Amino acid sequence: MSFNSLKTEILNCHRCKLSQTRNHAIFGEGNSNAEIFIIGEAPGKVEDIQGRPFVGPSGQLLDKIFAACGFTREAHVFISNIVRCRPPNNRVPTPDEVKTCIPWLYQQIELVNPKIIILLGATALKNMAGQHHRITIEHGQWINVRDRLAMPVYHPSALLRDPGLKRPTWEDFKKVVHKYRELVNPDHYSAHV
Picture (tube, rainbow, N blue to C red):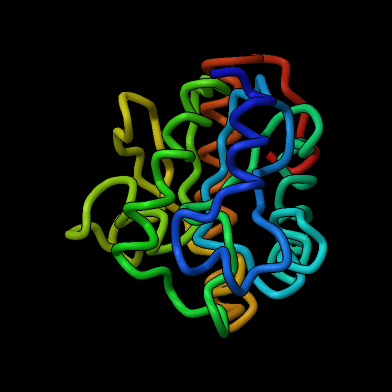
């Protein structure tokens, strides 16, 4: 399946009840050949309205982190989610919703073919690596997800709720920059790493 045909299928999906309450299904955004693939939980209110991933307060913070790393959405990353449609009141997606939607994500990962996956928060970690994983224990440690290097980090929304998580999250992202230099571009520039 091509990237564009996958996008058409996702944007027109009605496989679960979330499609009944959404404004937009969110395909994802970024470089379709990115070396870094970002996985979040689900669209929020602003994302559902705009039809783009990570554009609300969490996304604005994520963009600041990207900038500090020397990464941009356009050049370095592709951003997606475990589920495509906003769960009511931003609740955690149910196991059935995840089971229905996650094959789209697997297809995106295969098409983008990144070297590095970043798992934003507990929902992304548990659904990509296994329910026994814990973000509080495993953030900042490289793990294997779908035969790729993956770095679990705290979700930006957690940083907005608890600013004390910003420092460990920045340390985790610094590891991503070093790995990017090792695997992709030894001359990658970041003013902060």
